[in-house]
Length: 303
Image (cartoon, rainbow, N blue to C red; front, side):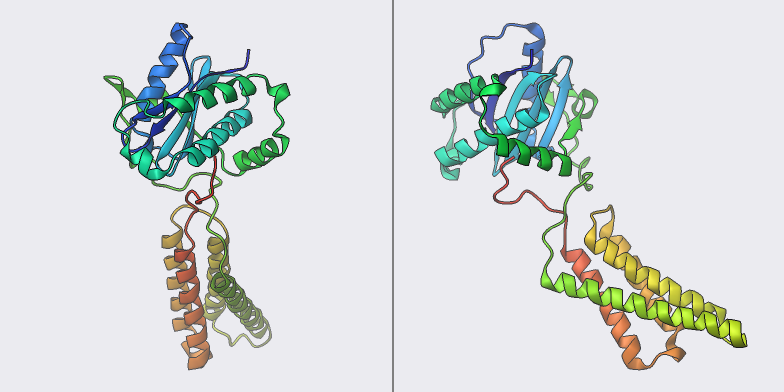
């Protein structure tokens, strides 16, 4: 049977439990899953902000935001969309109920025990999916999960040492699959359009150079190569600005270096203003790629 078995709210910086659902479950496998949940809660700050860990026939899902983590244990067959909608509702209610100062000032476990009542109510509601009325939220969550799926942890990822997670904080420094970039700025749009323009100009000059070779055979073949490499570098900068890939900044600098080298080689075929325009656009595009970073958790992110 698909159902939510346990849920808790913890403080990210030290794993202090702030509230949790009442636990009547004595099954050993469930208790083992809860032990893993407690281990994870100690190291939430080292994990991506949305993760899933499968432990046998049970699944641990958790999210974190604004210094608070929301965790749950459910059966393996429980839909991921419902699980993260459940955590989303926990987060929204908790944020409304308690301010940051109160959360940071908590010194005892389960300081917000009165929140347990809400956890129990929402748990009962999500264990009867037919009674749910949040169809729009479910659709939104389905889209969100497709765009940025939860990271799939494994027991080998976290390890256990005396019941505490043994996780390297450097492991997830890279860019997650399908991670989105920050919103496009006007300067970014302008840089992308100028890069396309420079790429088109290089392409046109390259085509004309090929025609010249075919007709007179006097054109330097290396110039043709330089024009097309410049075209590829400009278009690739547009790609880097638009899509989230690994090592974006390094790739952007390498593309800019190619643009500079190509224009240096084409020095005799272009005047100073043309060279200045191409190099300046390349530098501007590189800057915009560097400034448009992968998106962290937005202030209004509720999942």
